[in-house]
Amino acid sequence: MSHVQSPERLDYWSCFFLDSANHVFISNNETRFKYYCKVHGSYLSESEDGKHTLFKILTSVICSVCFFGVLTNILNILLLRNSISRGLSFRESLIILAAIELFLCFFTGVKTILAFLILCDWNRSQGAFYLFYISNHLFHLSQTVSVYHSILVAIERYFMVVAPLKSKAWLYRSKRRSAVVFLLVLTLSVILNIPWFLKSYVAKNEGFGFKTNSTLGAFPYVIKRHKFAEMWLAGLQEVFLGLKSIAPFPIVLILNVLQFFAIHNANKRRVLLTNGHKKDIKSAKMFSVIILILLSCNIMPIASYASSRARTAIYREIILLQLLSIVTGAAINFIIYLAFWQAFRNEFWKLTGNIWKGSDGSECICFSRVKQ
Image (cartoon, rainbow, N blue to C red; front, top):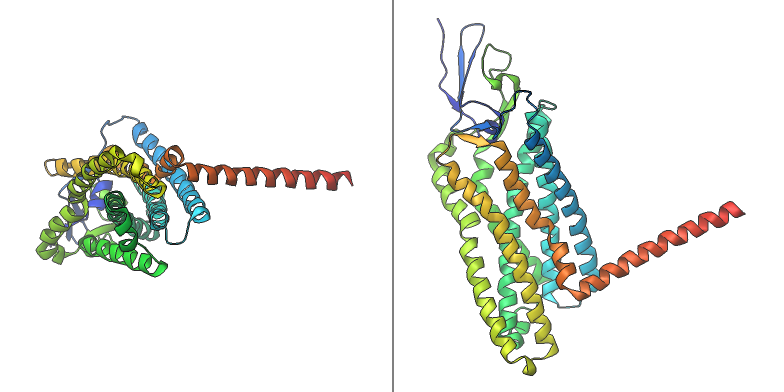
C-alpha cells in the first residue's frame, strides 16, 4: 500500500532551476514524495537544440560588468584615499560606497556563475548550492546597504548646498562617527533582509534517485522553504520589501527635486558664493547623477517583481536582465567620477603615469642586465 507524504514547498530559487510547478517521486516501497512551486523557471525563447543563446550571452555580459565593477571600485577606493582631506565627509562617504558596491559586484558575479553552473548541470553539489545560497543573501544585503547609504549621502549633499556653514558643523565626520553611521545603515539593512535570511535553507532532495518525470530528479540538493515562513514571515516580508525596495524611490525623487531647486537658487547668487560652497554645489550635481542612475537601474527589478505576481513562470533571461541592471548601477560610478570630478581625474592620470613610468623603469633595468 502506497504512502503519500504531504507536499513540501520549494524556495523561489529552487523553482528558478525547475521547468514545472509540481514534482512527484515514487520510492521502491511506493512512498510518494511531493514538492511544489508557486512559480517555475522558463526561457523566453525555447530552442530545440537546448543552447539558449540569449541566456548564455546575458550571463557573459553580467560577468564582464561584475569584473569591471570590482576593478573600478578598487580604483575608486585607492584614488579617493589618495586625495582625501581630513574631515571631508563626502569623500569618506564615497569610499564607503565604493567598498559596498565592490561587494555587490563581486557577489552578483558569484551568484550568476553558480546559477549558470547549477542550471547547466555542471555542478550541483552541496557546496555549489550553499555558495549560491550565501552569495544570494549577501547580494541582497549589499544592494540594500548601497541604496540606503546613497540616500544618506544625498541628504548630506542637500544640506551642504542649502546651509553650507551649519552643515560643516553638523555633518563633520571623524573616523569614529563614520563607522557608527555605517554600522547603523548596515544594521537597518540586515533587519530589512531578515525574512529572506530565515525563510529558506539548503537540504537534500529526498526523492533523488527515485522514479519521476520531473526535472527535479536531476537535483541531489534543493533550497527548501521553512514551514514557519508561511505562517508569520510572509506578511513581514511584504512590509520589509516595501521598505527596502519601494520606499527609497519616492525618497530619492523628492531629494533630487529639492536639490535641483537648491542648486538653482544658489546659482542665482553665484557671485556671492565662496569657493568651498561652489565645490559643494559641484559635488551635489555629480552625486545627483549617481542617484538618478541608481534609481533607473533599480526600476526594472521592482517592476518585474510586481508583474511576476500575475505570472506562473520565472523567465530566466528577465532575472538576468534584473541582475545586469543592478550591477551596472554599482559599476558605473568610476565613469561618472572621471566625467564630472577634476580632482579624481587628476589622481587617475597621476596613478596611470606612475604605473607607466614604473613599467618603463623595469624594462630599462631588464635591458641593462641583459647588456651586462
